[in-house]
Length: 87
Image 1 (tube, one colour):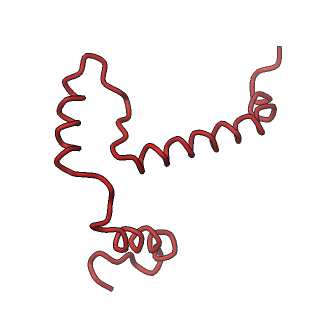
Image 2: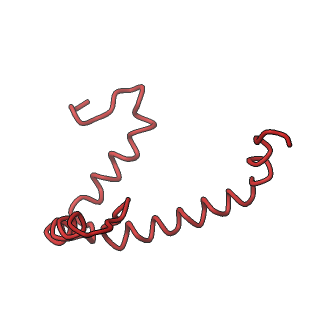
C-alpha cells in the first residue's frame, strides 16, 4: 500500500475513484490555463454562478445528473410530500 492507496477498510469505496483518476490522468479535455483565466473572469463578474462547470465533460455530466435527479424527484414526489404536516 502506497501513501496514496486507500487502506483496506476504504479500498472498495475509494479504489474505483483512485483507479479512474490514474487511468484518465493526462487525457482530460480541459485546458488548465484556460480554466484559470475563466475562473478569474467569473469571480470578477457582477453575478457569478454558484457552481461553475469547467469543461464539456463537466457540463454533460451535470446535465445528465440533473435529468436523473428530476426523474427521481417526480417518481417519489408523493412520498416526499407526505412528510409535510397534515392540514
